[in-house]
Image 1 (tube, rainbow, N blue to C red):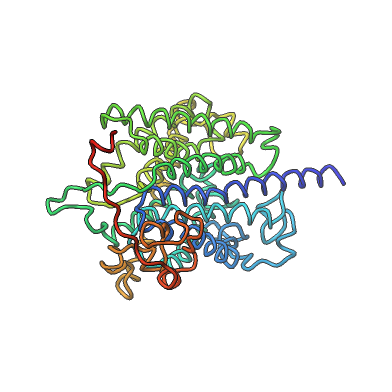
Image 2 (spheres, helix red, strand yellow):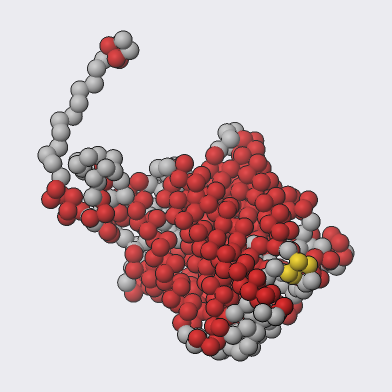
Length: 470
C-alpha cells in the first residue's frame, strides 16, 4: 500500500468508529427521554428512536446525502441521489468530491448518524401526544430540510461556508435545527393534558425514572466523543496529526463545566441542587461546544460550557412560563444553547485554530473585528427562518388535513397500550406469570397478555404501623 492509501485507510477507520459512537447516542436519547416522561409512554418513547433513525437512514440514502454533499451550487447538491457502488467507493471524486480523504460510503455513514441525532431532538418537545404516523411523515420531511442546511454550512461552496461560518460539528446544523422543529411541533400540538391549570400556571408532570435519564446523559456524553472529534474526518487536520484529540479535550472540559455549573446554578436559582438541571447543564454545554470545539482554547471551552448550563437552568422554566410544553427541554437545551455556542465561536475562535481547520477567521476577542460574529449571527437567522418555516408549515398542513395529536382518551391511557397494544412495564398494569420480567411476555402484546394472565390476586392487608415496627 502507498502512503496515501494507508492514510485513507486510517482516516476511514477513524470516521467509521466515530460514526458508530454517534449512532449509539440514539440509545442515550432513548433512556433520557423515557426517563423524563411517564411510565405509560415508556415503550413508545424509547422505541421511537429506533423508528426515526430508520426513517432518517432511508431518506438520507435516497436524497439527503446528495442534497447535502453532492456536487451542486451554493444552496443545494444536485447529484448523488441513491448513490451507486462506484460513487460510494470513490475518494474525492464526483458526485461526492467534498470527501477527499475518505470514501463516499464512510462519508455517508458519518453524516447519516448526524441527521439521525437532529431528528431525535425534534420529538423531545412533542413527546407523549404526537400520533405515530407523524414520525414517518415529518421524519422524512425534516431529513430533507436538515440536508439542505447541511449543504449551506458544511459543503464546499455552500453559501454560508463561503462567508466563513464556523460550525465545527453542528451546534447550528444539528442541534439548533432540531430544536426549531421541536418548537414548531410543540406549538402546534399544544400542551399535554393537565400540564397547565385554568390560571395558566404549569403543573409538574415528573418523569418516571431519573436513573434512566442519568444513564442516557452519560451515553450521550460518551457518544459526543465521536460526534465532535469525528468531525475532523481524518487523523490529521490542517497538517496537525491527531487534532481530534484536542477536539475531544475541549468537548470534555465544556461538558464537565456544564454539569458542575448546572447543579450549582440550580442550587442558587431554584434553591435546590436539581439532578435534572445538572443533566441539562451537561447536555447544553455539549451542544454549545459542538460549534466551537475545534476553534477555541481550553479556558474558553470551560466558559462556553458554564454559560450554556446557566442558560439551560434559566430557560427551561422560562419556556414553560411562556405556555410551551417541552417535556425534555429540547428548545432550551438544544436551541438556546446552540445559539450561544454558535455566537461564542464568533467571539472566542483562535485565529491559529481557524487557520488549522481552514474555515473562517479569529473571533472578536482576538482580532477586534466583528466579522466572524456577524457571519455566525447571519447563519443563525437564515437557518432559523428556513427551518422553522419549513417545519411549522409542513406540520400545520398535516394538522389541518389529518391531525397530528392523539385523541384525549389515547393520551390519558398512554401511548404504549393505545398505539402499540402493550406496556413498557406490564407487571405494573396486569398480573403476569413470574412477575417483574421472569416471564413477562410483555413483548407479545395486549391480546396475549389478557389471554394468559391469571386471575388477579386479592389485595394484601397491611399490618398496623406499630405491629409492623415490631
